[in-house]
Length: 207
Image: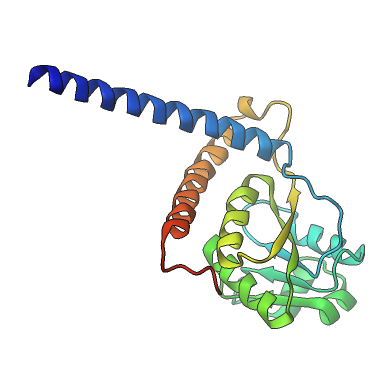
């Protein structure tokens, strides 16, 4: 019995060490990819542009820039403060009035990334969009894409990262490390959830 206990304890210890090593490697892979702005925007056209509001400046501005360039014909800005009117938001973001009026939809229901994905799925369904450019901060892109793919498994997403991290020395910046560490925990959690959905025999992937 003691021998069996020792073997079990050794197995558990090795499993914990292996899991810790995998998480550490995963963090550096995730963080370096985010700092490099990967995955890259391939420059292709799409049906619509999705901007996810939140921590990190420049997302809305970048969304309108892509709209002006003709990358897509319509823009959804998801997660806007419900207290702000359309005009107040347009002025605060210095948005082009003509593009704002003709081609922009404002989503006010989402309060987190899960909500963003649900709001985007409804918008895409209403407009029959299957190819969407996703605009969010570099550190937020990995989790956003996972949430969106769970909400819209048949859609094609083109990532367009707004750069907030220094690609050459992100590991030396405490603020960047803290932000990446917190986000990585969320990335792991959403991937565990996605794997659970994939294993679920009652999940037919339909929205």
